[in-house]
Image 1: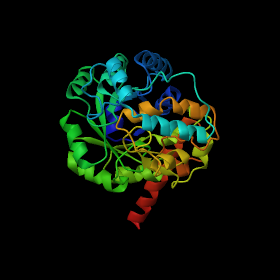
Image 2 (image 1 turned 90 degrees about the horizontal axis):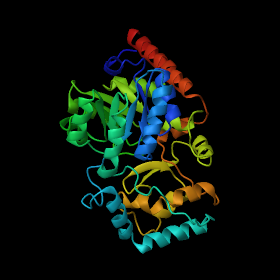
Image 3 (image 1 turned 90 degrees about the vertical axis):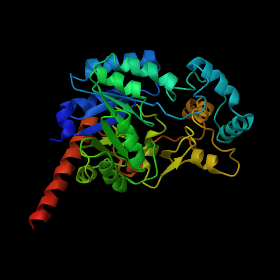
Image 4 (image 1 turned 45 degrees about the vertical axis):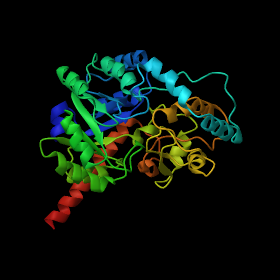
Length: 369
């Protein structure tokens, strides 16, 4: 396949695979696509180790790193990261803490004597900049910004290192802002996507974004894409490639939590919900007792980012370890309905291409007819 992104990065297929798992990133890049490591959950020291491992196992193939640098979040003016954590912790209402503990007790989740060591992660400018610094010390080909346009100085710094910059956009206005910030590649992500996502469907969004940014800007289609036919549709709508995420949660190499994997494999496309119950910003994940509780009349409501995640950070590993399993959830898109079999990551890449070719051949037959 030859598109602008395959030419730009020297990859065989215009398939980008977002994952928090280094094994998946390396496997997809070796298979001819481009793996992109989500840096959010790693400390700078851990990210250094992860990227060093990828460097050693990617076979010289290109890969990318994805960071979260939201333009707006609670506590943006509260000082450095260490100071920010303490102040935000003190701002979490007792009502929310009480509701959470009662919810956990109701489902048999055992108390913990340990406090969560990662309550903030890379949700802020202060915590994401060290991740950017680490990433640019490695031979990455792409630096992606997951929530809003990256700060202009970050985009400029990446370009100085010869690294292309990508940005996720959920509407045409966001896409134009990304271009103004110096972004090279727009990842137009429809509401079908897992994790943080907007409310416009992929089929509507892609051509809107392509038209909004003009022919000089590369666009990747994202949101519910996990089949070759969907890949063909994305390119037909004007994109130069596809950005995928959810489908890598059920591959052999994935480190998806043991209690979440069976739920992902059994879920249908109707078993997800877009909610603020994870981070405080709208994100799509499995619909479970967790999401229902936060949407119920008993719920005290959501806290703004990053306080919502800071509230639940300690609860997530406790839920993974104990309880009745009803609270177990995971960020995933509506493509989960097609994720019913565990395969090697490389096989998923090849299946995408095979079905893509079949779709194109079918269209050619129709056109010739």
